[in-house]
Image (tube, rainbow, N blue to C red; front, side):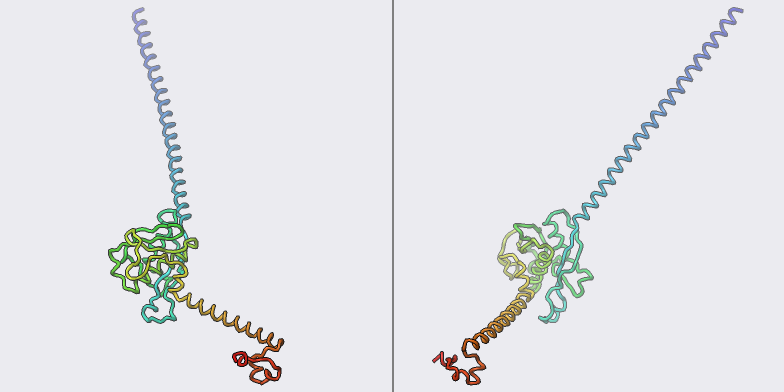
Length: 274
């Protein structure tokens, strides 16, 4: 009887130990699962932060690109002038607005963007053509002391006719000078070297706004206007002088014609010459 009770007690003890073991195992599993869930939660939060930072970086990059864009005023060859040779026609179709984004946020890159944009003619430049169409390679563009330097490759320069050469130079120069008020001139170099001529044109000096105006016949028009203004001023001075002369007894043309000069006893121009 005692032996049976002893065996029963041992059996109960084993079952109790087993139950406790299972209970501890369950707790450990629950704790690990909670830890894993916390870890997953932490990783998700971290991922969200990283993605948020990445999104912010993309937004900043997009904002930077928009900040770099600028308004350019491009010039194109007037097809009607080329076809007809009519000097009353403008040589260039000028100041065509274009929104450009340079490769980098620098003045040199902006000028390069202007030169590159001339390769295609927008719809807004009706009747326009481009000589800066890729037949001559542009090696580089840089800014040097307020002057834009455009370096071209010598390899295909012979493909430019005399007229093409003129329009190549002035199409670029006018576009750059109209777009950038702080640039005073455009200089052309060949294969990184200063030369006196491109094909036949003198490029020893930068092309400034006065040179472009002269090519476009604007200088001649301005000179004619200035001459007309000067003549008008001269006429006004003569008229004033005539009035003064009349008052002081100096003979004017009308007095000479009417003979009043001899009546007044004042010597006229012919008398002065004698």
